[in-house]
Each structure stands twice: as structure tokens, then as C-alpha cells.
Amino acid sequence: MVVIEARSVGDWWRSIDRTMLFVVFALISVGLILSLASSPAAAVRENISDPFHFLYRHSVFAVLSVIGLIFVSLLDRRSIRRLCALTLVGSLALIVVTLIRGHEVGGASRWLHFAGFSLQPSEFLKPSLIVIAAWLFAEARNGAPIPGRVIAFGLYLTSVVLLMQQPDFGQSILITLVFGGVFFVAGLNLRWMLGLATTATAGVVSAWLFLPYVATRVERFLNPDAGETYQTDTAIEAISRGGVFGVGPGEGIVKWNLPDSQSDFILAVAAEEFGLIASLSIIGLFAILVARAWLNALRLTDHFAQLAVSGLALQFALQSVINIGVNLDLIPPKGMTLPFISYGGSSMLALALGAGLMLALTRRRPGAYLRA
Image (cartoon, rainbow, N blue to C red):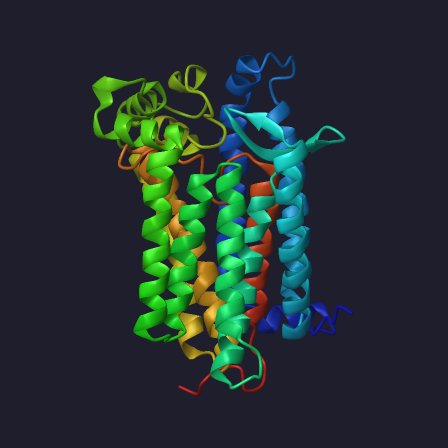
């Protein structure tokens, strides 16, 4: 049974962290503006007659995300755990289905197609795994009669193994880094940390040896002359053309030749049309969101909420850094979206789930925060 804590809009408004809420809304708004700029070029590349096809779809997902975010932010902690448990089990089951009947793109089966929409279950796996792992670590610390650490580690390994079968190396790396972060914040001993580090190292080496596309991307990144680097080169060109103030809204030309300009390389579109200042402002919004969440986590009295908020904020931070790093040619391409800004229904809905969870867990309740 789902329990909603806030009994009125006023109760919710007084208890919610409005800074985090406004930052998320600002990021969604920026995403809509950039979708307006990139949609015509993306429609031409996909041979779609409606130039604002992607903008309309992005707008629908934005509205659904806001509704979902507000609903999740109203939940109590028990309902949060139940929701994340169901989401985790459902995500793992759907990932198995993608391995059998998924839609293959570029040699990877990560999407399920139905009723004209595509669903990427791995996006919903991330926030739900973070919250359930946080709960298990907290229960282990409180002396609960369950092997919480072993179960959490087993869920992590199961998730990574299934993701590597798709294969999805980028999501596997992100989950590993975030899971390791929650491990660290939970204060687990050195033996567990060494176990996770060994597992992660073995996974990277195995991917290098047995997944040709991973080795190819890394080698191409280390030696650009050895392969095709069109996407990153074009993104760098767009960023260079934008300068400090950009060439003007809708005046960008690189987006017409840049694949995935509406999704993975949306930052390049922002840099070309709105310039360095706008790009730094976007990065600043992510910094405010993550910093605010971590500051709240430090003051929370509930260990489970501390771990969950820290992990969810780390996911936002790392996913943003990965996407920005790819656009700047600092790391190999990972197919990672820029939270709330890139086009992508599954990504936006899952990120709204994560943001809603952070807002719910950081709400001001009696005894929720340490006294200053």
C-alpha cells in the first residue's frame, strides 16, 4: 500500500526542499528549449516530416516526469522502499526480456518497443538499485537478522551481468561507481571495498578482452587517427563555433550534421547556439542540485535516507560528468544522456523518479534533521 505523507499542498510545499525542486524544473525547462533548437535537424536525419516531432515527444515526457516527480516526493519512507523494490524487480525482469526480444541498435539490445514507444529498463534499474542497496546497508548496520551486505552485493552483480549481456558497458560503469560510492558512505570495512574493486577491475578487463566494441572505442579514443571520430570531432567544432555568447538561438549549423544532437550531444548544441556562459550555467545547475542534496544528506538523522540521497545525487553527478566529458572528447563515447536535458523518454522518467526520491527523503519532518 502506498502512503502519502503530505495531507495538503501547503504541507508538501513547506516540507519540500524548494531549491532542489526549482533546479530540477530549471533543467527540464532548459531541455525543452534545447529540444526546440535541435528537433528540426533530428527530424531531417530521421526522415520525419514534422520538424518538431522530437520537441512534442520531449514535452509529453517532461509533463509526465513532473507529475511523477511530485507524486514520488509525497511518499513516506516505507512506500519509497516498496516502490523501489518493485521497480528493481521489474527492471531486472525487463532487462532479461530485452536479451530475448529486445530491439537491437548498433549491436546492442537495450530497448523494448511497444505502441510506438521505446522503453530502456536499465534506466529505471539505477535509482531503484541505489535505494534498495542503501536500505540493505542501513539494515545491516542496525543489526537486522538478514545478510544485507551480501544481498546488496548480489543484486549489484546480477545487474551488471545482465547489463553486460546487452551489452551496455557505460551503464555498468555508472552503476559500479555509484554502488561503490554508497559502499563508501555506508562505512563498510576494507575487505568489502577490496572485493568491489577487484570485481570492477575484473569486469573492465573482461570487457576489454571479450567485447570488441569496448576495445574499439577505447583504442579510437586513445588513438583518434586509428578510427572514425566524426561525432566527437563535430561536437568539438560546435562548441568552438559558439564562443562565449553563441551564434544565436536556432542559428547553429553543426547540429544538422551531428548524429544524436538531440540526445547524447545536446550540450554541443547548447554551446554553439548559446555559448560558453549558457554551458557553464547548465553545469552550475547540476552542481547546485548535487551539492544541495549532499548537504541535506549530511544533516539527516536516518542512515537509510543518508545513504539513498547520497547515492542518488552521485548518480546525477556522474551521469552529468560522463555526458559532458564525451562532448568535450575527454572520455570515450558512452551513450549517456545529460539528465533532464537530453531527449529520451525512459531516461527522463527514470531521472524524475530519482529526483522525486531525493525530494521525498529530504523533506522536513519532525526529527528528520540534526539540530543546528
